[in-house]
Length: 369
Image 1: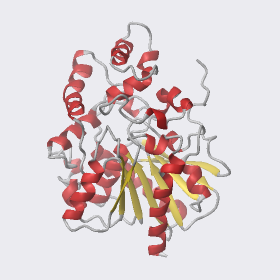
Image 2: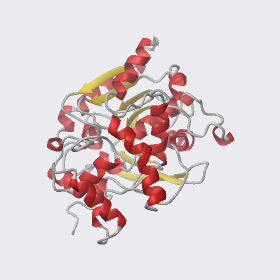
Image 3: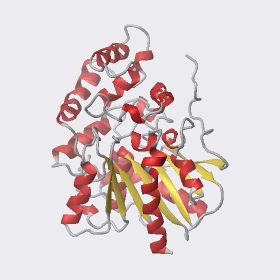
Image 4: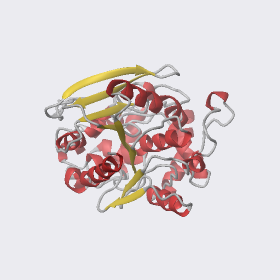
């Protein structure tokens, strides 16, 4: 079937110079930053996607997207990071041992360095992060592998991941079933397009038996991959029809090591903790990121949809826990009528969500002017 919206297109961004910055991490991966610039700006914004998505979630041409919104509202130098979780790379398609510690130790620090090298040390950097991109960036702030960031917006989950009971069951048994019994190295929203009788296509068909809320197989498989709900990642009514039809392009395949790390955090009383505690490669990282996060100096706006069925009230919980521990520099914004992914990918997010993000950044800009 011919795509109605090209894969990896940047056509959704208006009137901006577009440039890609390629860089390497200390553990040997090539990553990239996409820069959208209308003019030099004292305040630079860096966008960070979640697991299995990419820069595409911020530049969608089917509706007003976050990059255009920021550019149109005075933040004229916007960057988007594609780190090792991005579906624009192949890193999730073969067996590996990556955890979220790798993102906090290698990806985010180098990405911020690249931005600073390009814009200069005197510019203020604001980060808007989502899902496991949000969690791993919060880990980087807690571990102080990233410093000097003026503000951070964290969607859905940060240092206190909580997931529904069915999700806990899935991440405890599915890695064994998929990897050991079915010999599948990853789970993919595109399985329904695989050849007939393939293992992936059969799993997609099985998922569709339990998801009668729509007729898009990728939507059903995404609900299998993450969260608990019909659908799990968003409210259907918040998505443009074109977005719903191209879900298998917007979300990629992934191995299950990140799921294992989430499971370890949930088991650790819903606190972000290190995955490989005895590996000397990660000795510089804290055992307990939540405890280390009490000293994060960057003001954070925790945001969450009140219908989030992936990480539930994780960010509400994080904000309240930090406030109860005497940390008063952070803020909380709950978005009514939204779930997990539609916070950024919803057709009306520019009306319902983005103004709150802009308001927070503006207040941080004024505080540092």
